[in-house]
Image 1 (cartoon, rainbow, N blue to C red):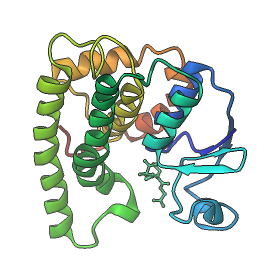
Image 2: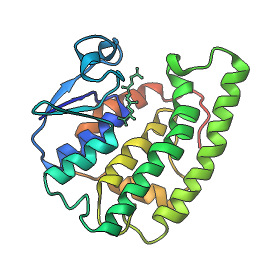
Image 3: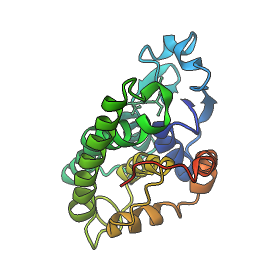
Length: 224
Ligand SMILES: N[C@@H](CCC(=O)N[C@@H](CS)C(=O)NCC(=O)O)C(=O)O
């Protein structure tokens, strides 16, 4: 299997961390999203959406990090994607929640427009309003995550066992570290993220990203 990905890509890291932790045999093919490699052939033929990650399982092409995580867990019979109906439904639920509600306001509202020129709004008023909107809604979603999904007792997002939802959620939420979010006001989130950062492959997979985060330290950003 081949995984088209890049260590600086949030959605790639969700899959890269799971693959590394689970010891799944996957050849990583890094697609340089900074030089626009993903927008040109041959990659644009593999994924016409021009986004990473993409899994190629012997010619079977799968896009969407959430779908890739579930496919890999199912294929390798991993307990990280429970077989039973209701536990599996809860994993799907929280992954959909991260992918839609949360990532839209946190990633694309608060975080990315502040650091990536392509996502910065051309008009200052619009930019300010975008970030303010993202911040306000991120705070509301973080409270839901802290109080409802994780709560004071859960070690992981859906209970006491790690699932693909934890890999997905960790990849998504840590993108906030680019602007300096540290989840300090959300103790259950902080406990969960700190726990996930102790995964055996975290340092290796997140090393280049952490270097990027360090390079931006000291800059003034809006955070939650
Ligand atoms: N919904 C997709 C989103 C993938 C995505 O946004 N990938 C980013 C990197 S994190 C990308 O390829 N960006 C390139 C671009 O926007 O030009 C998934 O979860 O796989």
